[in-house]
Image 1: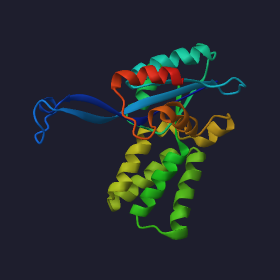
Image 2 (image 1 turned 180 degrees about the horizontal axis):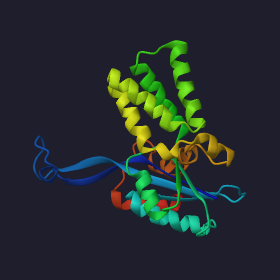
Image 3 (image 1 turned 30 degrees about the horizontal axis):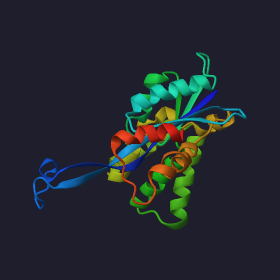
Length: 232
């Protein structure tokens, strides 16, 4: 079994150009200005589920598709074979699972458990639940996910939504429906699979951010990937 994780964080980039090129009207047209943009740096890791070997990382200012190609190479270096079970816990970011499945079509994506729990608490608040009632509502539904009752939970929510529409509940229904095959936490736990993407979220701090987010740093985009290559 091979564990893969992939997530993004933002770094500040900047390019110098004339005020005219930047569309800045309160400067002289030929005056140099720095145009800053926050851009996504994607960090991924691969490791066998049971191993004493260190994790291997990829980290790039690039699309998910490009980073997944490098992640495939890293996974192969860690022992990936056509018979490997690939497990990918992730936070459900738009386009992430889709990119993973292009490169690893047999992967089991797992919706990050703390991420789902946070969604449940936000929905309980929107439904005007407070105190112990709010906690009990969240715990009940998490327990049902652990028991593999995702279809029944969705039916309960949809029935409630039909009687009194609530925008936050609708968003939760859409989110869980999208990841309906990724929340069988009880089964995953029995197999020893990770239920959250905390490993790669922690890696943001000590792989890209320790160097690229030092105080006042602003990077030319062309210099970001060479520095990330050194970091990994």
